[in-house]
Length: 305
Length: 235
Image (cartoon, rainbow over the protein chains, first blue to last red):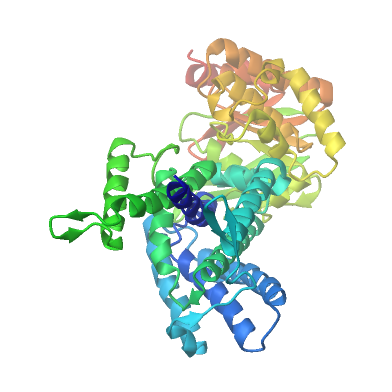
């Protein structure tokens, strides 16, 4: 029982990270129509920036964290002005493909200025090696941090989106951009804010993930992006709560599969191979989409002008 | 209050409005009538700043606003109720009204205005927490007008307020338009296909045909005009 509980908790930890990533992806997609495949690269870049601050000038962890979060906001603004604004009126698929190029550019730049990060490096946090034992369940300190940080961020984001003037305007813009302009809202300012906010979320996810595995390189977020996107599509791409649930679901399912498949063989195939698990998740995802093409909660897939 | 001179508007190389001029005195209801494709919506979009003008002048309250972007024109007091209403479907009725007050700061004043608008449109009161997408056509039009009023406009532009509404609802909408003008002295410009209803509430009217104004005058004079009757009022 406690082994199962352990797996569920691990699933929730991974899931809440995916959830935060999907939230950032859906936020950008809904408001600016960009399906952002560079999201992983943005997260990596920010986490790498923090690694450099920690290892180069040997800054205190918390100072480096604050500087990195400031950097992420700035990065979001630069990307909005330099990348998203010029392609604003392009079709959805053109923009999506442009983000693939953006991801490459970001990773290449990171690798060029920080060549040591082409290799896997050790990312240390104050939580390293600390853990909690609660009735047979083992909880590492960083996992607790992840759960607390993601839960509070989701709460704050929800309050922001539902109750503040700017949050309501972001949701209004996701519905109808010309009408938002008619209300006197400066669409450019809101776009910039959305990009800043979502790259802030990406930075937090990147730092938490690097902190969890204690490993980092310029591409370490790439494998995470796929499940996050699956979560986003499962959630329906246009529903913020849906995206969150989608992300958590993918994390849970992935961990549960690992638990149930461990040690099982199907003929000569070792079912505990992570590749088998990923394949199963993908198959499940395709089946869900066949039954509910609009995702579990959303209204329509890829519907946005 | 609003003075439009030699307005040319188009999309790319296609010109839709060929030098339109008209005048809207303060406190008036001015109707611009025309059939489908006459350029009515293009005119409204150009007046509100959603599309750029090619040449000409738009003066509003003594200020040239023709080159201002939409959000700045709203701040000058020029609000548009767009064709098809353009509500924020996934936002609640209340949130739509709050969006209407985007440019205003005082929370207490905004709450008072929401109360006033709900008094004017009691149907919305019961639907306050409903998503705007779930409203009926009539309720939607009321919300679209209410949302525009939340910005305290000095001039309200209405793009086909009768669009897609049942005849009995159309009556109500035009009553509201007349009330807003009479009770609050709001200046109103409306474009309509429904000439009959529009001429009943308007003081003066302009007939728009293929992007040019072909006729204008007092609403009562135009109502009696046999050509207008034949073309726009079904004989």
